[in-house]
Image (cartoon, rainbow, N blue to C red; front, side):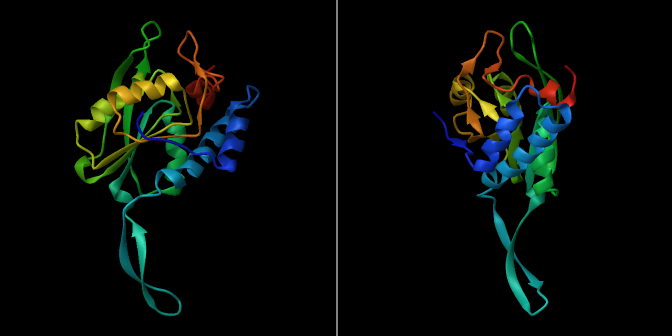
Length: 209
């Protein structure tokens, strides 16, 4: 199995429990996704490169460290990835953003691409691909296949929930990509949904069901 990081911070787990509840409104669900994503970003970005700059404090000059947000790219798997994207941009607003538009064929569960746009010079950038659910793994694998064509400096994958089937798919096709998640649930059901899960993340974020 590839590198899997479970972000088990109490605040993340508390908010994930609230997110799972079927009575959560669209508004609260959307807000919770953003809050959890912002909290998870502290762990996801723990090893971000830094460099030193000269600044003046109110008392004296000093050398201090900063990140180069323009070297960081968040890639959202549309449409549900937008919820995580917003949370992470609240922490690193200077990051660049890419989008991969994929939908899951309801019969085959295969990911079909309909949109693709990334920042330039990806070989100089660290890329974090975001999607709330790593279920069958088809969308994540397809997105990583495409992004790898541009040779990013590094790659990570972030989701709120996953399951053994999704992790196995990633291990088979992209074992080199670290996965960050808040929980590993029991399994997929016959329709390709994670159980116990939280339902369809896209529908719940956008109130379309």
